[in-house]
Length: 233
Ligand code: ADP
Ligand code: ADP
Image (cartoon, rainbow, N blue to C red; front, side, top):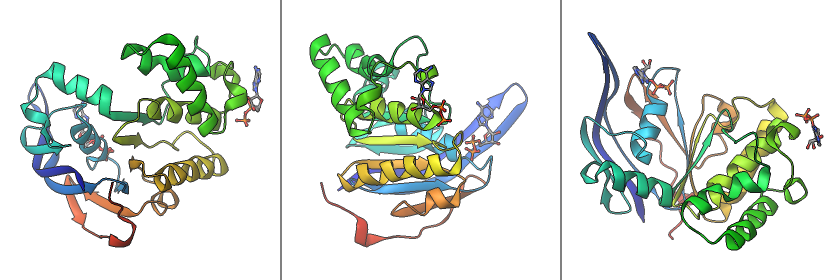
């Protein structure tokens, strides 16, 4: 099942006289159940592509269809709602709230979506257990190691049951063995059927994905396809 279909997307950043073309006509499809790595040199448009596919940002031209919805046709408010309900995000810098403990960080998206507090708490604990942090629920981010913080962030991304987890350089702040454990967690989640799209410039991270999309200078460089690992869901 095709989850995301991008057709000829173009994105140019403008500020004053400056005009920086970031995406110059990108077309691609992502199937439900895939684990895709977006790779390529720095400044080549990877983060921009992720932002445009996930509904964080809008394209200048071309279309992005997610779950049958044309993101560009949605109002900002509906696009924000769609993103909050259907997308989970993991960032290089974890982006946890320092004054909240792990379980409070994880339940936040549920509380924002008006899930009852008791149920939100229960689901947040279940997610922490799933990422191997059942015994760290009351720790604040400052009391956790880098790898543990990223696991909390992954639990927070997962807790709403997103269609896709988007991870932008999720191992960028981690040492190599911690990074490997985080990538292993993504692989496990994907085994369980979770669709994952990861931006990385780390080849060892990229090799864990089912498929690699390489961007060069705002365009897709190659389209290697690994049919075998595609799952229907
Ligand atoms: P990558 O993720 O591959 O490093 P990005 O998508 O971040 O690449 O950036 C692509 C290009 O767009 C780069 O030239 C970058 O400098 C530029 N760019 C990214 N974000 C902005 C922005 N908010 N304003 C202006 N230029 C930007
Ligand atoms: P790293 O493995 O990145 O070096 P640390 O040495 O900071 O991380 O942490 C090692 C372990 O100690 C982790 O399991 C972490 O949860 C725990 N820990 C670190 N600081 C505190 C703290 N202030 N209070 C409670 N536990 C802590």
